[in-house]
Picture 1 (spheres, helix red, strand yellow):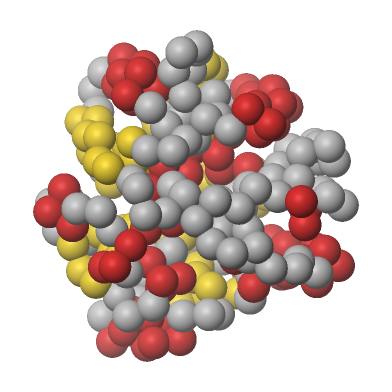
Picture 2 (picture 1 turned 180 degrees about the vertical axis):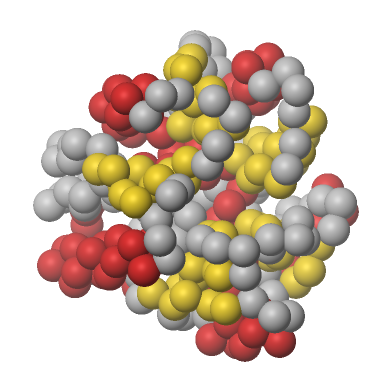
Length: 251
C-alpha cells in the first residue's frame, strides 16, 4: 500500500506566505476540516498516511511536499528559497528516513522547494524561479544521476506545480496563461481552469483534484479518468493545491 506523508495545519495558517495573489482572509477551522477530508480521500483510495509532527510556529508547514523530493529510495531534503520555511524540513527528514529512505540535503547556496519538482518516469522537471535556484537544481541532478533533470522557467506562479502537473499517461497539464513555456514539456494539454492544472495520481485512473475545477474534472472524465474531488478553498487562498498537502511515497 502506498504511503503519503502529511502534516496538520498550524493555528497560524492564516499568516502563510502569499506572493502571486492578493491576500484574503483564511478560515483556519474550515481549513482544518478540509485537511481532514483530504486525508480521508487518500485513505479512500487505499493510501496509508504518516504524519510529520506539526510545526505550529511555521504557518506554511501544512504544505509538506515542499520539504523534499523523493526518487527511488533517496529523499533529497529541500532548502527553501523562503528563509522562514526552512525549519519545516528537519522533522520531515526524520520521518521519511523512518520509512526506509536514504536521505541527503540541498546545501547552501542552493535553494529548492519540493513543489517545484514534477517527476514523470525518469524525467524530472524543476521550476527555476522564486523558490528554487540553479544551484539547487544542479545539486538535485547530482543526487539523481540516473534521471533526466530539466530546468524550466517559473515566473507567473509560486511553484512549477502551481502551473502544471501530469496525467497518468505522462501528459503535462496546465492552465496556459500561467505556464511560462509550454514547449518545455514533451507533451502538453491545456485545462480550462487554474486549479484544474493540479492533480495527484491516487490510482491507475484516479485523480485527486480540487472542487474549484469542475470543467477540468469533466475533461478528465471524458479522457477516461475518475476525479476524486476535495474542497481545499482555504489552502488555495495561500497558493496551495492538492499536490503540496502531501508527499507521496512509492517504491
